[in-house]
Length: 269
Ligand SMILES: NC(=O)c1ccc[n+]([C@@H]2O[C@H](COP(=O)([O-])OP(=O)(O)OC[C@H]3O[C@@H](n4cnc5c(N)ncnc54)[C@H](O)[C@@H]3O)[C@@H](O)[C@H]2O)c1
Image 1 (cartoon, rainbow, N blue to C red):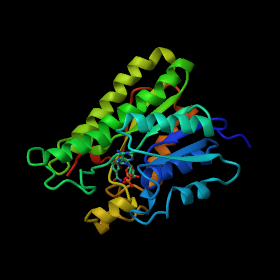
Image 2 (image 1 turned 180 degrees about the vertical axis):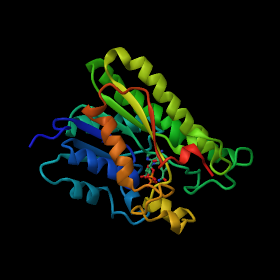
Image 3 (image 1 turned 180 degrees about the horizontal axis):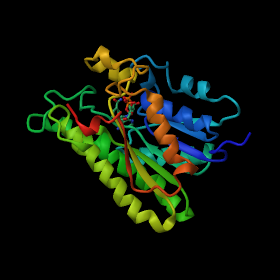
């Protein structure tokens, strides 16, 4: 049976674990060959999701899907050039780019402390800028120029619901995700004539292993079978939106931000 992403090559940054891994699995399930990525080979082990990237590749290599793995810091232009060379050598040129790597990760690896707009240490600000904005720009410059030259391609950037209202905890992260959403609009305008579409997904709080390990989780928001939409997202629900924006059913949608948050953005608390 033909699948909607048959023949496409997708690259999902930060896909060794968490939301990115679920997105990569979804795109593979729709027929794409997939390049997965993480900061280093053992990043998937950090919150117990897999031993390493090799294990993630093996789990995804079913039904003839071609999967390759690359590593490196997205904020390092040389490392990203090497990722592109390795992906093109192993799979071919990328048709679908998902800029997922990022997070509220400070210089020492965890959340910055303090994490408000004025007291956050400068080294954490710099790490956040690198992980969330500069990295997204470097990966975009590296992988979208060939799409523009070919006249086809699809890009999905990951922001956050925190990009769309004022926050005190995670302020700089929120500012940078707002920048990612606006970078999306600027890219979409710039690429309109070339036929390359660029959109953003802004997840609400989502039940990844990292989220559950680093947050005080509200038990009332865990169960996704409940009627109320005032709950955490399942990673699959974020992947649904990414797959839609990466696929043919969104072929005339460009420069948009879709919040996948059960409506949290309407009345953040
Ligand atoms: N989980 C949530 O609640 C939530 C909510 C809103 C937005 N998001 C966004 O979704 C994306 C995925 O988040 P997640 O919850 O799956 O987190 P995660 O930590 O499980 O996954 C993020 C991945 O990105 C990688 N990464 C981060 N900075 C990197 C860098 N500079 N270079 C290379 N790799 C890097 C990490 O190693 C990790 O594998 C992030 O952009 C995050 O900001 C997550």
